[in-house]
Image (cartoon, rainbow, N blue to C red; front, side, top):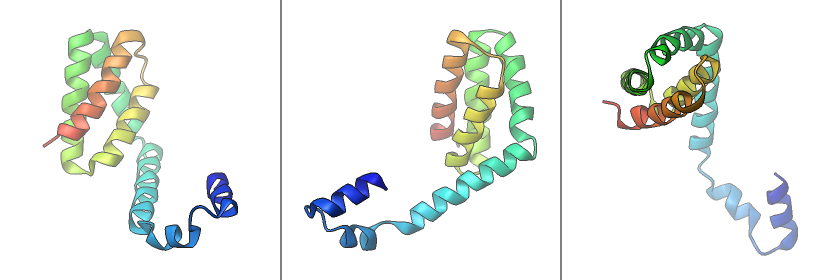
Length: 117
């Protein structure tokens, strides 16, 4: 909003045209996805997934990486990949994984969600 106010004040950008041409459907869709993710978190999904990720992390780097990737790929096949990335990120954050294993799980989350079936 601050940048928008600065742009409007500078008169270099036609802010009215920007507002009319903005992809509002995408903005509303994104806000809806965030609402779904936090609803799933409140329902206990991320806590459950954190437990699964803890088991995988305890088995080592390869198990954590492949397990996270396959788990998020599966989840993205039954729901949109955008909320799956967010659910995965919250689940990884809630897990006990640290260091290289946690970093590998983060990358596996993004890759699994994007390359999921």
